[in-house]
Length: 280
Image (cartoon, rainbow, N blue to C red; front, side):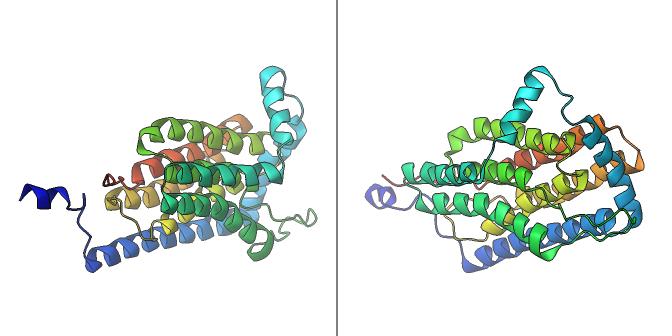
């Protein structure tokens, strides 16, 4: 009896019905957040009122560009030097983390999250979405979502997916700080508007949810995944109320937007499946 038990897998295979239910939950979570992203885009970009409120803050950021001093200016200069090959190295690092652990599936999922977040961002920004001229201020290229924010957020989420369970807390804290800082920077330095950063948070969460549909051995956390799909859109909506309905200052605006990105990383950490111990 004990010999048989010793050779049993650590976790019995889940029935097909449970796997289907999980896939429906993950796809539903992704779809709902795509709807939220569409609402964000329509409200902030496709209406004159939205553009007017966004441009007020964007103009302030452009006027203040270059006024930072000390360590903050150093940090801004560092971000200015980021190049596409740095992202490629980051994605490669995500895959390497999973491969070193002997988890090919985790490595693949991490790479898909990291590269997919930026890929979907660029597809939306450059191909599918546009910014109409509703204020007669001349045409302006679409900037939603923010590529820099999505790149850092995607790498943070990818490392969480590919990394070991014991490293999730430090990876989550580092990723939350890095993602939030990037979201703050691109608004403060006039690269992006608030809605661009909020859209990046939604894109990262959408890709994270979609990757959960892929086959996996881990114990899934259905409630946490649903919570992620509710928290990120709710936080984005609250940020819009604070920033635009409340006529917030530029400082408040970029801090609030950065906080939404930070929250996205932390909520995704809670939604990560719990790994099953491997048989020796």
